[in-house]
Image 1 (tube, rainbow, N blue to C red):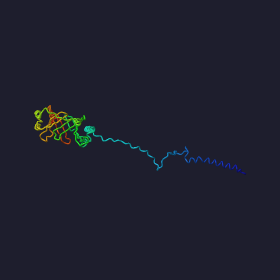
Image 2 (cartoon, one colour):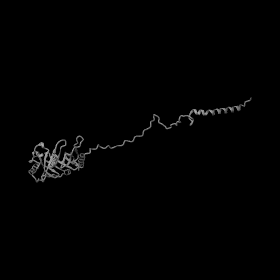
Image 3 (cartoon, rainbow, N blue to C red):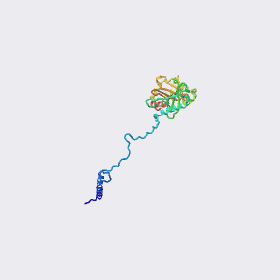
Image 4 (cartoon, rainbow, N blue to C red):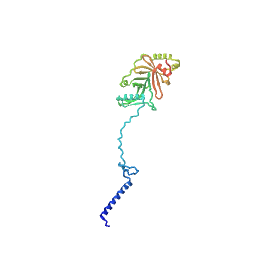
Length: 282
Protein backbone atom coordinates (compact mmCIF):
# COMPACT_ATOMS: atom_id res chain seq x y z
CA UNK A 1 0.00 0.00 0.00
CA UNK A 2 1.36 3.27 -1.02
CA UNK A 3 1.17 6.03 1.73
CA UNK A 4 0.91 9.61 0.63
CA UNK A 5 3.71 11.20 2.63
CA UNK A 6 2.44 14.70 2.29
CA UNK A 7 -0.96 13.81 3.58
CA UNK A 8 0.69 11.93 6.46
CA UNK A 9 2.64 15.02 7.62
CA UNK A 10 -0.48 17.15 7.58
CA UNK A 11 -2.34 14.60 9.72
CA UNK A 12 0.58 14.44 12.12
CA UNK A 13 0.64 18.27 12.63
CA UNK A 14 -3.08 18.40 13.21
CA UNK A 15 -2.84 15.63 15.81
CA UNK A 16 -0.07 17.55 17.66
CA UNK A 17 -2.15 20.74 17.76
CA UNK A 18 -5.14 18.76 19.10
CA UNK A 19 -3.07 17.29 21.96
CA UNK A 20 -1.63 20.71 22.94
CA UNK A 21 -5.14 22.16 22.97
CA UNK A 22 -6.22 19.55 25.51
CA UNK A 23 -3.21 20.18 27.80
CA UNK A 24 -3.36 24.06 28.08
CA UNK A 25 -6.38 24.28 30.51
CA UNK A 26 -4.68 21.82 32.91
CA UNK A 27 -1.49 23.84 32.97
CA UNK A 28 -3.34 27.09 33.72
CA UNK A 29 -5.33 25.50 36.60
CA UNK A 30 -2.13 24.33 38.26
CA UNK A 31 -0.66 27.87 38.41
CA UNK A 32 -3.82 29.33 40.11
CA UNK A 33 -3.28 32.90 38.68
CA UNK A 34 -6.41 33.07 36.54
CA UNK A 35 -9.49 34.59 38.22
CA UNK A 36 -12.17 31.95 38.99
CA UNK A 37 -9.78 29.05 38.51
CA UNK A 38 -11.31 27.17 41.44
CA UNK A 39 -8.38 27.95 43.79
CA UNK A 40 -9.57 28.69 47.38
CA UNK A 41 -6.71 31.14 48.06
CA UNK A 42 -7.70 34.83 47.72
CA UNK A 43 -6.24 36.84 44.93
CA UNK A 44 -3.62 39.23 46.34
CA UNK A 45 -3.30 42.61 44.68
CA UNK A 46 0.31 43.64 44.66
CA UNK A 47 1.19 46.67 46.82
CA UNK A 48 2.67 49.20 44.46
CA UNK A 49 3.07 51.98 47.06
CA UNK A 50 6.72 52.99 46.97
CA UNK A 51 8.51 52.58 50.33
CA UNK A 52 11.81 54.11 51.25
CA UNK A 53 14.70 51.81 51.77
CA UNK A 54 15.95 51.37 55.33
CA UNK A 55 18.79 53.75 54.59
CA UNK A 56 16.39 56.40 53.31
CA UNK A 57 14.12 57.30 56.26
CA UNK A 58 11.13 59.52 55.66
CA UNK A 59 12.16 63.11 56.38
CA UNK A 60 10.35 64.72 59.37
CA UNK A 61 8.59 68.01 58.87
CA UNK A 62 10.85 70.96 59.64
CA UNK A 63 10.15 72.25 63.16
CA UNK A 64 8.59 75.70 63.48
CA UNK A 65 10.97 78.37 64.70
CA UNK A 66 10.78 78.91 68.46
CA UNK A 67 8.62 81.92 69.21
CA UNK A 68 9.82 84.45 71.78
CA UNK A 69 7.42 84.54 74.70
CA UNK A 70 7.55 87.32 77.28
CA UNK A 71 7.19 85.61 80.63
CA UNK A 72 5.47 88.01 83.02
CA UNK A 73 7.23 88.78 86.26
CA UNK A 74 5.96 87.01 89.32
CA UNK A 75 3.00 89.09 90.45
CA UNK A 76 3.22 90.69 93.82
CA UNK A 77 0.86 89.46 96.47
CA UNK A 78 -2.54 91.08 96.36
CA UNK A 79 -2.05 93.43 99.29
CA UNK A 80 -2.70 97.14 99.92
CA UNK A 81 0.86 97.29 101.22
CA UNK A 82 2.30 96.74 97.74
CA UNK A 83 -0.16 99.21 96.26
CA UNK A 84 1.07 101.80 98.76
CA UNK A 85 4.67 100.90 97.91
CA UNK A 86 4.00 101.50 94.20
CA UNK A 87 2.29 104.84 94.93
CA UNK A 88 5.26 106.03 96.96
CA UNK A 89 7.74 104.88 94.30
CA UNK A 90 5.76 106.53 91.51
CA UNK A 91 5.67 109.83 93.39
CA UNK A 92 9.46 109.89 93.70
CA UNK A 93 9.85 108.79 90.08
CA UNK A 94 8.08 111.99 89.06
CA UNK A 95 10.46 114.22 91.05
CA UNK A 96 13.74 114.15 89.15
CA UNK A 97 15.39 116.55 91.60
CA UNK A 98 15.21 113.78 94.24
CA UNK A 99 17.03 111.20 92.10
CA UNK A 100 18.55 108.77 92.70
CA UNK A 101 16.29 107.40 95.42
CA UNK A 102 15.46 104.11 97.10
CA UNK A 103 12.19 103.19 98.79
CA UNK A 104 13.02 100.82 101.62
CA UNK A 105 10.24 98.32 102.14
CA UNK A 106 9.57 96.33 105.27
CA UNK A 107 8.88 92.80 104.14
CA UNK A 108 9.31 89.94 106.55
CA UNK A 109 8.79 86.21 105.99
CA UNK A 110 6.84 86.79 102.76
CA UNK A 111 3.94 88.33 104.70
CA UNK A 112 3.31 92.03 104.00
CA UNK A 113 3.60 94.14 107.14
CA UNK A 114 0.58 95.84 108.68
CA UNK A 115 -0.11 99.54 108.69
CA UNK A 116 2.16 101.25 111.19
CA UNK A 117 0.54 104.66 111.57
CA UNK A 118 -3.02 105.44 112.58
CA UNK A 119 -4.64 108.86 112.81
CA UNK A 120 -8.21 108.88 114.14
CA UNK A 121 -8.92 105.42 112.68
CA UNK A 122 -7.26 106.30 109.36
CA UNK A 123 -4.47 103.80 108.67
CA UNK A 124 -1.22 104.47 106.83
CA UNK A 125 1.76 102.43 105.65
CA UNK A 126 5.14 103.87 106.53
CA UNK A 127 8.19 103.87 104.24
CA UNK A 128 11.70 105.21 104.59
CA UNK A 129 13.09 106.73 101.40
CA UNK A 130 16.73 107.51 100.73
CA UNK A 131 17.04 110.32 98.20
CA UNK A 132 19.52 112.85 96.84
CA UNK A 133 18.60 116.46 96.08
CA UNK A 134 20.04 117.11 92.62
CA UNK A 135 22.32 114.10 93.05
CA UNK A 136 23.86 115.58 96.18
CA UNK A 137 24.31 114.06 99.62
CA UNK A 138 22.00 111.26 100.66
CA UNK A 139 19.08 112.19 102.86
CA UNK A 140 16.24 110.21 104.39
CA UNK A 141 12.50 110.85 104.28
CA UNK A 142 9.71 109.24 106.27
CA UNK A 143 6.61 108.84 104.07
CA UNK A 144 3.09 107.73 104.99
CA UNK A 145 0.67 106.30 102.41
CA UNK A 146 -3.02 105.98 103.24
CA UNK A 147 -4.17 102.37 103.12
CA UNK A 148 -7.30 103.12 101.04
CA UNK A 149 -6.98 106.50 99.33
CA UNK A 150 -3.23 106.48 98.66
CA UNK A 151 -2.88 109.95 100.20
CA UNK A 152 0.81 110.77 100.75
CA UNK A 153 2.03 112.47 103.93
CA UNK A 154 5.40 113.65 105.13
CA UNK A 155 6.19 112.47 108.66
CA UNK A 156 9.03 114.33 110.37
CA UNK A 157 10.35 113.56 113.85
CA UNK A 158 13.21 115.56 115.31
CA UNK A 159 16.13 113.80 116.92
CA UNK A 160 14.92 114.66 120.41
CA UNK A 161 11.33 113.63 119.48
CA UNK A 162 9.99 116.96 120.73
CA UNK A 163 9.05 118.35 117.34
CA UNK A 164 6.86 116.29 115.02
CA UNK A 165 5.27 117.50 111.80
CA UNK A 166 2.67 115.62 109.78
CA UNK A 167 1.75 117.30 106.51
CA UNK A 168 1.16 116.74 102.82
CA UNK A 169 4.14 115.26 100.99
CA UNK A 170 3.59 117.79 98.20
CA UNK A 171 3.80 120.64 100.73
CA UNK A 172 7.09 119.24 101.99
CA UNK A 173 8.45 118.95 98.44
CA UNK A 174 7.31 122.45 97.50
CA UNK A 175 9.17 123.84 100.51
CA UNK A 176 6.15 125.29 102.27
CA UNK A 177 7.35 126.47 105.65
CA UNK A 178 5.95 125.06 108.87
CA UNK A 179 5.22 127.90 111.25
CA UNK A 180 4.05 127.27 114.80
CA UNK A 181 1.79 130.08 115.98
CA UNK A 182 1.74 131.28 119.59
CA UNK A 183 -0.64 128.99 121.53
CA UNK A 184 -3.78 130.33 123.15
CA UNK A 185 -3.64 127.79 125.94
CA UNK A 186 -0.71 127.39 128.29
CA UNK A 187 0.69 124.08 129.47
CA UNK A 188 -0.93 124.78 132.86
CA UNK A 189 -4.32 125.10 131.14
CA UNK A 190 -3.82 121.75 129.45
CA UNK A 191 -2.77 120.09 132.71
CA UNK A 192 -6.05 121.21 134.28
CA UNK A 193 -8.04 119.77 131.34
CA UNK A 194 -6.18 116.47 131.63
CA UNK A 195 -6.73 116.22 135.39
CA UNK A 196 -10.46 116.75 134.87
CA UNK A 197 -10.42 113.86 132.41
CA UNK A 198 -8.69 111.66 134.99
CA UNK A 199 -11.31 112.51 137.64
CA UNK A 200 -14.08 111.21 135.37
CA UNK A 201 -12.41 107.84 134.67
CA UNK A 202 -14.19 104.61 135.66
CA UNK A 203 -12.66 102.68 138.54
CA UNK A 204 -11.32 99.99 136.16
CA UNK A 205 -8.77 102.45 134.74
CA UNK A 206 -8.23 104.69 137.75
CA UNK A 207 -4.60 103.50 137.74
CA UNK A 208 -3.94 105.77 134.75
CA UNK A 209 -3.82 108.66 137.21
CA UNK A 210 -0.61 107.15 138.61
CA UNK A 211 1.23 107.86 135.35
CA UNK A 212 3.14 111.09 135.84
CA UNK A 213 3.36 113.52 132.93
CA UNK A 214 6.20 115.97 132.22
CA UNK A 215 4.10 119.11 132.34
CA UNK A 216 7.11 121.38 132.66
CA UNK A 217 8.68 120.06 129.45
CA UNK A 218 6.68 119.63 126.29
CA UNK A 219 7.07 119.26 122.57
CA UNK A 220 5.08 120.41 119.56
CA UNK A 221 3.15 118.26 117.12
CA UNK A 222 1.76 119.79 113.92
CA UNK A 223 -0.98 117.56 112.48
CA UNK A 224 -2.10 118.79 109.05
CA UNK A 225 -1.90 122.42 110.14
CA UNK A 226 -3.34 121.92 113.64
CA UNK A 227 -0.96 122.61 116.55
CA UNK A 228 -0.77 120.37 119.59
CA UNK A 229 1.29 120.24 122.73
CA UNK A 230 3.14 116.96 123.10
CA UNK A 231 3.58 115.64 126.66
CA UNK A 232 5.61 112.53 127.46
CA UNK A 233 5.41 110.34 130.55
CA UNK A 234 8.06 110.98 133.18
CA UNK A 235 9.22 107.35 133.40
CA UNK A 236 11.16 106.15 130.37
CA UNK A 237 9.64 102.66 130.47
CA UNK A 238 6.21 104.23 129.92
CA UNK A 239 7.39 105.55 126.55
CA UNK A 240 4.17 104.28 124.96
CA UNK A 241 1.96 106.73 126.89
CA UNK A 242 1.86 110.27 125.47
CA UNK A 243 -0.72 113.05 125.49
CA UNK A 244 -1.48 115.57 122.74
CA UNK A 245 -3.41 118.72 123.62
CA UNK A 246 -4.71 121.16 121.00
CA UNK A 247 -3.12 124.56 121.59
CA UNK A 248 -6.36 126.40 120.85
CA UNK A 249 -9.31 124.17 121.76
CA UNK A 250 -7.69 122.05 124.47
CA UNK A 251 -8.84 118.82 122.80
CA UNK A 252 -6.93 115.84 124.20
CA UNK A 253 -5.61 112.99 122.06
CA UNK A 254 -3.80 109.83 123.08
CA UNK A 255 -0.51 109.30 121.26
CA UNK A 256 0.78 105.71 121.51
CA UNK A 257 4.28 104.68 120.49
CA UNK A 258 4.65 100.95 119.79
CA UNK A 259 7.77 98.83 119.69
CA UNK A 260 8.24 95.29 118.38
CA UNK A 261 8.95 94.04 114.88
CA UNK A 262 7.18 96.85 113.07
CA UNK A 263 6.69 99.48 115.77
CA UNK A 264 4.28 102.23 114.84
CA UNK A 265 2.22 105.14 116.08
CA UNK A 266 -1.42 105.64 116.95
CA UNK A 267 -3.25 108.91 117.50
CA UNK A 268 -6.81 108.62 118.79
CA UNK A 269 -9.36 110.40 120.91
CA UNK A 270 -9.22 109.69 124.63
CA UNK A 271 -12.58 107.89 124.65
CA UNK A 272 -11.38 105.70 121.79
CA UNK A 273 -8.23 104.97 123.76
CA UNK A 274 -10.31 103.64 126.67
CA UNK A 275 -12.42 101.53 124.34
CA UNK A 276 -9.58 100.01 122.30
CA UNK A 277 -7.11 99.43 125.14
CA UNK A 278 -9.45 98.59 128.00
CA UNK A 279 -12.81 97.77 126.42
CA UNK A 280 -14.54 100.63 128.23
CA UNK A 281 -17.24 102.73 126.55
CA UNK A 282 -16.92 106.14 128.12
